[in-house]
Length: 313
Image (cartoon, rainbow, N blue to C red):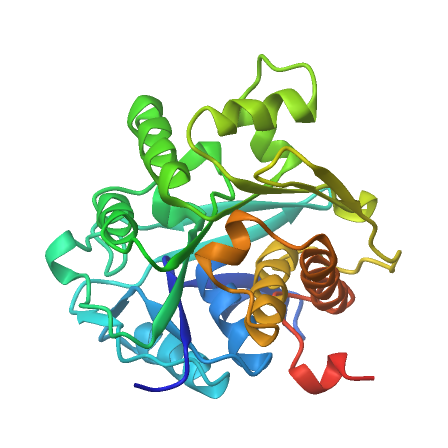
């Protein structure tokens, strides 16, 4: 059995970002993308043994994504290859906001089935799930099934809710509820909480709604206003983050997830036992490490997570 591995489970896609040509025309340049791929890349760069479960095409876009993963030391042995197309996301920026057009029909990632899910080796100690892969069926059900059959391993979920991808809200809410019930850690943004529990008048009330679904350790990110941690025993922690100049927020949350998991793993705390009754000091250190990693990402363009050497100074 090798070193304990974190297995990221979810989407890997190609972001087609606009770039001006010398003659004034606009071109689209491919970049590796997808929330779960971003977290896997960030974990690999932080020196953590990490693998990715996703569907990749055998087309040249799939080769492009595979090369990017390998370059960031992500184990790709659990990738499911097929002749289906790669998911493409074309991006335009309007009034400073990114507008996406996705091409995802019958893609290599979306069409995964439970039968495609790998048998997990004993070396896999934790699973991370999230992103649009939890909304896009049928693959969403395959990822949920993998989590439900992985009891005994740490499970972290970041739904990173994108309402435009939700075709059946009732099924999506049910799926998230099933995942929250088996998750050791749930990370949500304040926007996610508003969608999950719009009737609640406060963050605490929204988290209480997640508790009713079985949630234990809940982390709520508030951008530059820090992170709230709601512990299983009801304790609430507030962890501040350093103010930095934000150039591009793409990939910030994904990098935070990786930094958090990397710190917990380094301290021997990435276990169901610790997360069921976490030590506040060690948990605070992990949250701060995640915030430090995310702070590097937001200070440069694109989802470009830091390498571990960038956090050692």
